[in-house]
Length: 144
Length: 181
Image 1 (cartoon, rainbow over the protein chains, first blue to last red):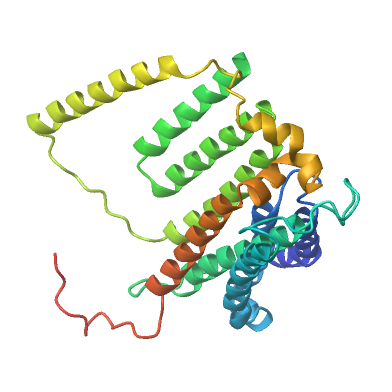
Image 2: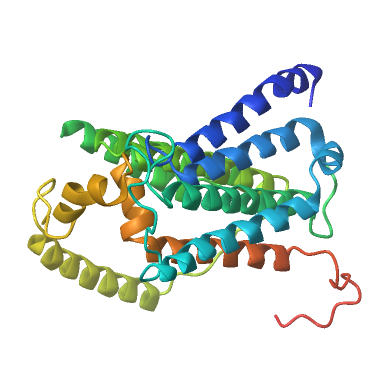
């Protein structure tokens, strides 16, 4: 991509990532949640890849991070569900009503579930994109 | 609700264009227009959670579809339409329309849903979970099983894409065994 796109991407990619993290963390207060925030996080990475190309992206984003984030998010979400058994049944919100409502630290396990799903969705969808765009099938020219 | 009908007409036109367009890129853009119409519709129906998710996923899918389809030669399949195909199409679409008419008469009016289960959620969500956003408290507390299933589906689909598009262990074109078709 051209210099203008790269220059603007440098400024905007961080803001988009920050907005995604905000949506994930405030999922229990405002519209949004883990899924939408995770997709916005993955869109910020995709923005980076589209502007700078694959080689630069490979240098800056380690591939291990993607599979690690995907697996860790899934395990984290399942672990929250299993922890509910200690207080009663599966997916019981065992620390509900601890914080004051309408504040960031409230709603028990729901913010943790949001974080887990956001991590999982963000890394998983970015992995799909990078696999579809990097590993091209044989018999295709490498167009720029 | 005339605005809903307007958006719905826009979506229908977009869907028809997406199917009948010859170029693949134009079809993808028309699908994106349909998704945008759905997002506006969710906003009219006062569901900002769904509107945000729909808009964001639509953008992601548009990027992935364009990136995956552009420059990839896709051949159109021509099939001859015989009389049996037309007759069976008419028969099954007639059966579907009749069944849909019978079923749609039974559901409650638009905007007046049966509130047997959701009444409980609306009244008790804040007391029981402490979350200000009722939608999140439903999908992550009362209905967390559904979310677990959805997360599993996404996990499986990511694994499927990674397995299909892998580089290691893939045979090259000339070494590949004889194709089936």
